[in-house]
Image (cartoon, rainbow, N blue to C red; front, top):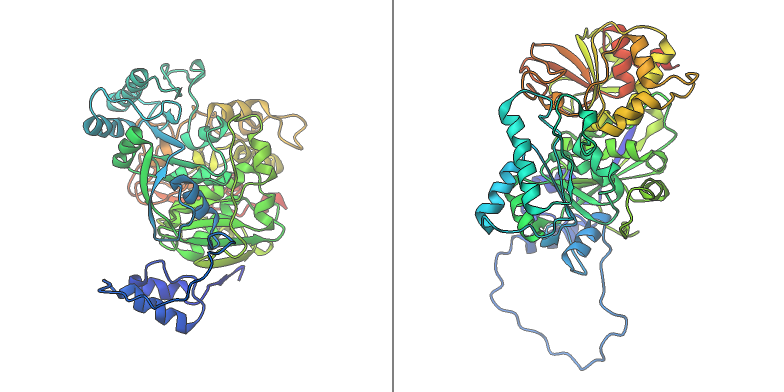
Length: 511
């Protein structure tokens, strides 16, 4: 086994079976203590209390006693202006950034106006980020109308950060257009350690890579945040994932998160924080950390988080001038469970249809014939993802055997695909290598195909097909046709599969 789990007594399975304990018992370490906790948890009411007589004593001079807190608990503490919090506490949190896009923005604006008034103003026009990115490059009139609604609202409210698009025929003619919201948020400097970032999209958790609390919320909550800058949240308990060992050259962060989700299941982190630490994590780039945090929601996680370090600070140097204060888990902080992985022993993975936790070794699926490959989305459409795919194509010197669609996440990534030289290629760019391999021309930045947008969406599956994809979900209908089969994989595995026409372990070309 490449992993092990260390759970404080009682174990996480014990707690799951004893829901009445809530999250109050996870730090107790003896059976006696557990019994005490259980008794107090089921007590509904205190009828009366008689305080014993005490002799007079001097006030303590050491200050108030505080319990150790996790990274996520500390962020909640700062944002709620409360010195001490524990899992299960419900608190009003001050929001640092609210993001919405073309799918949920119109609904959120409608709720805001209904509850606060047609002429109401948002709580802070500089803390709202609006990014059209989902159903953009389509002739669907309703999808296009959604972008118009975003534009009208931003003009009315004088929103500072609206990344507009008007010319749908040529995205490069829109200097403000960015592309996929989760990657654009990072590239434009909206992600900062210690802050609270909320978005009307489940994969907002991507931003946890920066040592902040980031999670998705619904339109109703977003409408309330637009008016007040606050939201009521429950403090989640934290699962800690310790990833150690030298990561083999044929693995990427996508393999790591597929391993974890396969280990704990799609419900294993329901309303829990997933904190990633260890020597392997410390060596990951920011983009790879974003991949790791991106898919915590596929395990049911409330948020994922990587402690900020030198890699984080260096990435932010030219992204933001606003001050931020990173926080870290205390040494004696209590974690619901701790999982340990020796990454050096892992092999390339895929998630078979139709669930992200349907984990399998890529080499065990070598007989699965595929119809296409998709490289893109917030999970697998970053610059490093395309460099990884190009590395496989370059090493093989072969042409792809199935249609291979490339969709850079943002306009910046698209430019990188056409300008950055691939290491070891003699100066060739990703786009040149992709062309030589017979891939489709890199498309306009968007995430439409990932969640099956309108029927004219580029790379959407309009027929029942088998696809190897670098995206994050493989439920029926996710990329279009309800009978489509999606194998989630890393860019390495996706590129290797494109070259063979079957699900393929990338070591076939990288070793």
